[in-house]
Amino acid sequence: MIALAIVLAAGVLAPAFQAQAGLPGKLSDVEFRALVADLAEPDGMFRSDNLVSNEDTFQFILPELQKTVKPGGVYVGVGPDQNFTYIATLKPAIAFVPDIRRGNLHMHLMYKALMELSPDRATFLSKLFSRARPDGASAKSTPDQLFQAFENVTATRKMFDETMAAILTHLKKTRGFPLTEMDASGIEYILSNFYSSGPFLQYASSPIGRTRYPSFAELQVATDSAGVARAYLATEEAYRTVRTMQQNNLIVPTIGNFGGPKTLKAIGAWVKARGAKVTTFYTSNVEQYLFQDRIWDAFASNVAAMPLDDTSTLIRSCFNNCVSTNYSSRVVMLLDSMQDMVAAHQSGLITNYYDVLSRRR
Image (cartoon, rainbow, N blue to C red; front, side, top):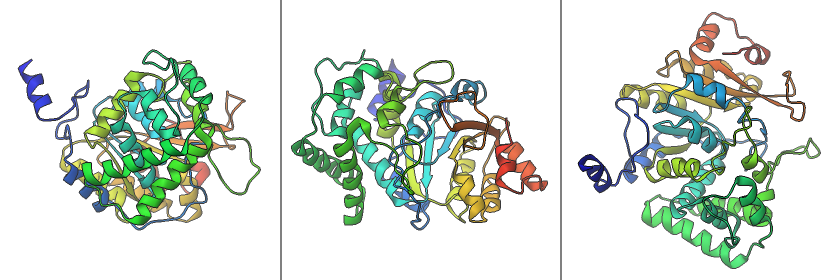
């Protein structure tokens, strides 16, 4: 009880697992802001805003991944909020979310503010969708019940304006984050998409006319390969896991190219200086673009500079080119040993994207 009182008095929300030695239980606002800035590379371009994942099977590998990756390590991942589902399940001590687009930083700052302002799932979704909290939404609601309830509520401009003002106040005044006018506009653009589309918001990509993408709600009611609902909004416990990390400044978004000269190396150096290991790296299908830009070798060298062990696992997605047992999806999630991938690269065994896709842990 005395130890718990000391932790609470220090303002640290304690996780339910043992972090690797040397990793902090909390970052101060100054440390958080410095990390976001110090890790960053110049803003880059991607063909899509990528507001919602297009990987409807991204949970499938979680039962297998949990057999290898233990809680308390370091997570690195790209893109929007599917990272939260991996974080809620794997329970790292700290997570880094580098992405080539500053827009992804805007999205994660928006999520950070909304989660810190929302004690439960229904409040979070109410703010995200600019819709009044529906009657009957409770801690016991299943994800299907929760999203069906919000589908029947109309968004209001008044609530959007109030939420947007609350986000900016929280980030700038409570957290002291130095937002520019462009940053504020970027956050407003993302929130406006959720305001317009609510739970039906989908990934958007050009050219138009490709296979239908899953909606935000569909991804949240999806399950893993064993039929277990693991999305970060599936249960209050999963949501609280992610929210606690946000409150402790332990989900660190930044701008970075996986094949760039700075971000991944700096993350690796930060982790190494604390005697810890990078345990999980979610790359989505970024490696496809790294090969197209002829910088995959630089990415592999960046991974080699990270502190790894035999549990360190890379998660990648394969679109259309891999055999799937789930014929309703064109996306297959793959697991790879990070150490083995580095060794294969250094031995000259990886020369193209298909060599990468053929790899399995």
